[in-house]
Image 1 (cartoon, rainbow, N blue to C red):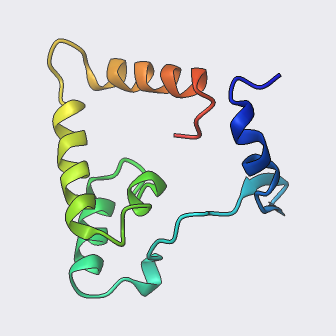
Image 2: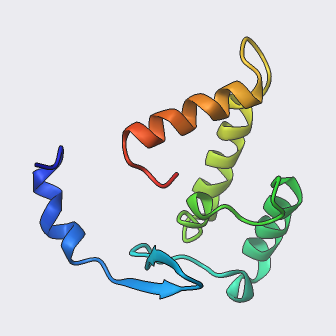
Amino acid sequence: MSRFPYAEPILEQRNVYMATNVWREMARIAWIEDADATGKMADLYAELKKTSARGNVPDILRTMSLRPDFLRAIDQASRLHFTDGALSRAEHEMIASYVSALNRCHY
């Protein structure tokens, strides 16, 4: 039995597709793709790509692209949270990854 039985009907309705031999779920949250970003959104995406370790806009931030003000605030809060202090960035990331795995969360 699932830990979240109320979510099972929702999970069964997800659209799943096969791409490059990896199962992925289609986004259920509307967001702005890189090619569609213009003006301030394009500038924000460019800034996020420069500061990203992978050189892209992380999907978790992209989900907030319809609210650029919120996206910027979350990005700034994340940078503050992951700044070296009592714990290194690597330790923060390790804890966040562990908690995500416990919650079966992609992020």
